[in-house]
Amino acid sequence: MDFLIATHNLKKREELQRILAPLGVRVLLADEIGVDLVEAEETGTTFYENAKIKAASGCKDSSLACIADDSGLVVDALDGRPGVYSARYGGEDLPYPEKMAMLVKELDGVPTEKRTARFVSCVVCVFPDGSELVAEGKCEGYIGYEPKGDNGFGFDPIFYTENGSFAELSAEQKDAISHRGNALRSFSEKLAEKLK
Image (cartoon, rainbow, N blue to C red; front, top):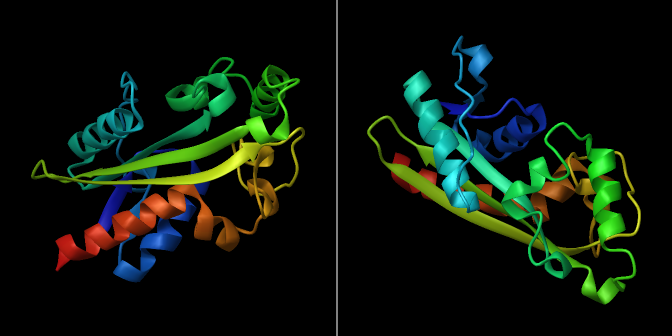
């Protein structure tokens, strides 16, 4: 069964494909099926609202079931920021090394025990009949003092768990504990039920 993923992020697509492959699901990007996705404006105030906006738009544009996720970094010492604005933190075009430096600077003087944070992911799939599947996942950790590791993407190099930064983990290690991995496993279970 083919699903469209409403992203141009190849790493997100690879992560989704690894987790959904056992169900016989093939995850496709818009350009692979010749669809021009309208860039849906993320006007929601929650991860669910933004994921649903993207999934509904992709489903409408392609007539395929469309999966979208909205995820972000929630930092307790910053009252939950950057949250749903994680990708736009410091400006949409600001490269992630600069976003990370900005975040570390904002936490200057905050001791390790108060640098708690979590990655949150909400996955929404909208089907052509209008039905939807929703799953959420979290991963608890803290913001480190400097980026470490070369794997992953986004804020991964400064988000630490007891196993080191997300960017120090292999794809399999990250999938096992990540917010998106947790959301996708839950989504996979719900999808297996729906496909029965």
